[in-house]
Length: 306
Ligand SMILES: NC(=O)c1ccc[n+]([C@@H]2O[C@H](COP(=O)([O-])OP(=O)(O)OC[C@H]3O[C@@H](n4cnc5c(N)ncnc54)[C@H](OP(=O)(O)O)[C@@H]3O)[C@@H](O)[C@H]2O)c1
Image (tube, rainbow, N blue to C red; front, side, top):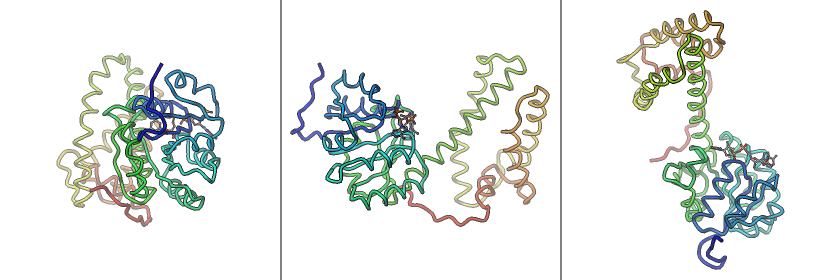
């Protein structure tokens, strides 16, 4: 049987609302760090393996919150998170850390709604996969009141490394969305490349050996984007936008010849074509980010970590 410090010790009790793969990982990390951990999920059966490890179960979100000093919500989106948090008893003194995904405006709306309900609310965004939780590989971003970030320190530390991004509740979600943008587009590129390789009779294993080399280019390329976007100097020291345009035309022809869906390639080509038409063909790839974001919008800069 797992032994936990009792509720009177200084180790705070944690409620985890939402037991998908990420909620279960959060609950497991909380238990492993010795926090009394109370669980609630819309479908109650998912709690069973964690109960076997020492967690308790609450019948409602309100009951879970009453038994904890920090409530972690981790459900599919902000709509579901708000429905869950709306069920907390008005008398609950527990602070809420919402780790569900969504975009910045949703996080800000949730924070002001929570303030109106008298709920102490901190927004968070988990930017590493579930198996990293509770390990040094975890990375979790937070934004909202600094006092709540500090108040949740013991609980946060059991989940993994946290970074505080400032008082604007939307900042963590803004970072998460940009990181998910990078991740999902890379996944799309990977899927398309494996499909094209397969269409040419290349085995997945043989292709993966060479795909690694492309993956290794990303960290340096990302730093170069940051440098060029912040200085506004887009000299094409490596490759130009026009050369990327020729490359993608070759890939489109190859994919068409194999009856492969070319939609993702056409999307990228349209971005390149627009930049070339605007006279940026000789510039570096980083210029593409600038031409994508200058679609007649004004953007209020968000706070950035030091
Ligand atoms: N999995 C990861 O590696 C990962 C990484 C980073 C961020 N995240 C984020 O973490 C959050 C949770 O992700 P997940 O992977 O655990 O699973 P998920 O499939 O995104 O969400 C499943 C959870 O949401 C609950 N849920 C869905 N609709 C609900 C509603 N209307 N009311 C109440 N609960 C509702 C589900 O309850 P039922 O069990 O009853 O269906 C379940 O607990 C998401 O926002 C996700 O983007 C996940």
